[in-house]
Length: 161
Image 1 (cartoon, one colour):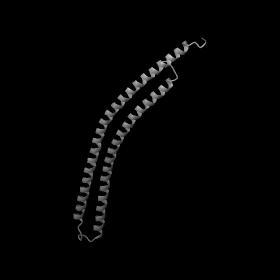
Image 2 (tube, helix red, strand yellow):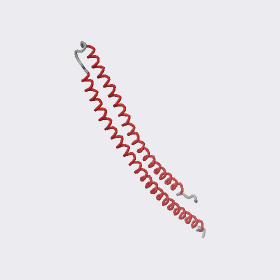
Image 3 (cartoon, helix red, strand yellow):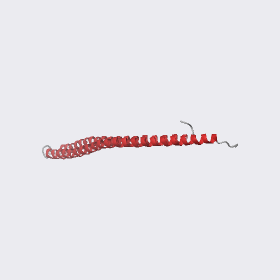
Image 4 (cartoon, one colour):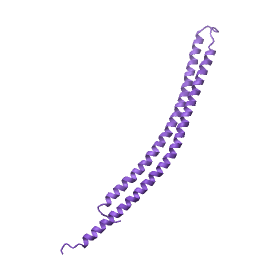
C-alpha cells in the first residue's frame, strides 16, 4: 500500500480498534474469573464456619466439664445439656451447610450461564470488530486511491504553462 499522509492515521485507528477488541475479551475473562472466585470464597467460608462450630462446641463441652468437675460427684448431670448443645450445633451446621451449598450451586449455575453469554457476546464482538475493520480498510483504500489520483493530477499539472 502506498504511503500517504493518512496512512499513519489509519494505522493508529486500526491499532486502537484492535486494542479495544482485546480489552473486551480481557474484561469478559476477568468477569468469568471473578465468578469462580466467588464460589471458592463461599466454599471456604463454609469450611471456616464448620471449624468455628467445632471449636465452639468443644469450648462449651469444656465449660460443662469444668463446672461438673467443681461440683460434688453425682450432684449434677450435664449429659442432657451436652446433647442439647450437640443437637443445636448439628442443626446450625447442617442449615449453614445447606445454605452455602445452595449459594455455591447458584454461583456455579451463574458461571455456566455467564460462560455461554460470554462466548456468544465474544462472537458478536469479534464479528462486529471484523466488519468494522473491513470497512475501515475499504475507507483506507479509497482515501489512498484518491490521494494517488490527486498526486498524479498534480504531477501532470504544468504550472509553467
